[in-house]
Image (cartoon, rainbow, N blue to C red; front, side, top):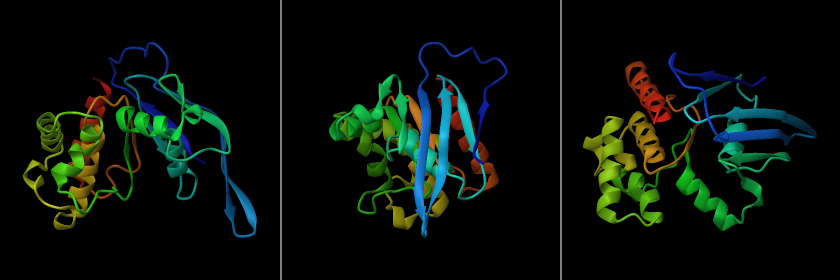
Length: 209
């Protein structure tokens, strides 16, 4: 079973306005050999501004599937994910891609960095696609890399840095711009304990903004 646990600082204010994310009646069924396996069945979840929610469950319980649906990357068989009041699956493919680029940061388990781009170019790419001037995009990307402690790897390519550094680069990329929802699939899985703690603190600070 997959569980969602909300974590907030002791002095956190009650979320106001519409939820950043709402999942209503989410159902996902996948083929498992000759039978159908229900991964998600009627999932209901609301995440308000400033909230950090941790999804917990054993391997194969549907955590990644749930996160990909929340980020608009996969479509549920039933139900509707809503980000900031926008029903994702009534959007055109172009509109959905734009919303994901500008409003949703997503960190995959495999990081999904582009091998042909340097670390800095990978991080600033979403800003460039959104029309941000190259100099400003570079400034924001460097600030994000500094926040995760790998600014000194900015001109290197993904193949030239460690797995943990690639993970941090992917997190930096998810933080640039004005995204209002961050979805991270095991964001500290490739990090040592000290770096993982630092990254989680950074994500908590981003929630408080």
